[in-house]
Length: 320
Picture 1 (cartoon, rainbow, N blue to C red):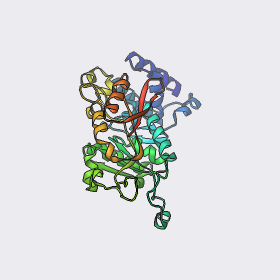
Picture 2 (picture 1 turned 30 degrees about the vertical axis):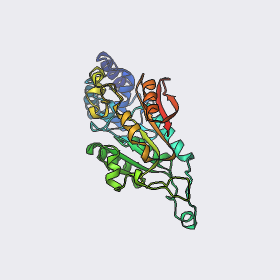
Picture 3 (picture 1 turned 90 degrees about the vertical axis):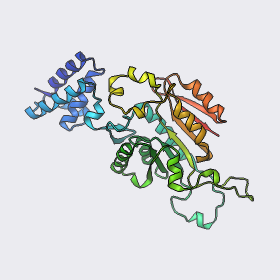
Picture 4 (picture 1 turned 180 degrees about the vertical axis):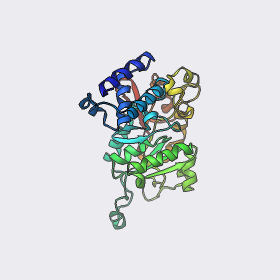
């Protein structure tokens, strides 16, 4: 069987099983089996597969026919140019989340927060002094934190998650993408993980009476960014099998209306945000208006709602 014949037969089989984008899936799995970039398949249409390659491809195609995601079969996916390992312990990164990450790293690259006192010690404090900081709330695979660190080399990132298995995966991904030294990973339930790490809640930091600017706590951030669970609990069973059967429920379930995590963020995030800092969050279809009301009720100012590739409202940007 040649490469072209393998693609055609695999495509026909997946299409009969109702798998969307059957040709693309077949090509991705064959490229994985042959350890080739997908586009190089087109230069090798006449190559004859070995028996081992044919058998290996057949097993991969069978797995995909059961709706196991391609990313789980291959073990990784590309996110903002970074190769991210995936597993059942964390949500598979989606293309629309790349837009959230891009908005985040552009903000960090442009955001140089003012220091209250600029003395000689600060001027010579090294590259970390005054570096923009970000908190990835619910990091999962670590894809957002890793993209921020990879695209904004001056930034320092903190990433937290309640799942020890997801956090272990995120740490592996950071090391694989050579940004581990600039990403700190914390295990815990939301902002409590920060308080446990640093001991002092940022509300306890006093302002300098001789300066109108509030003192910046060491555990406040220029950016808080998150792709939290936002599927309504009752809707999870209606999702595609690739999602409901393979992504962890904790990464999907946003409560009765899908908005529980946003309510928590708007109530708890403020003290952890620096002056002039921003929060950026991804959300689901049809949630924009409710989300704006949730933020406004807690005195947040919604700056913008950005659309995704399909022109659906997808990302909210706000500040205090």
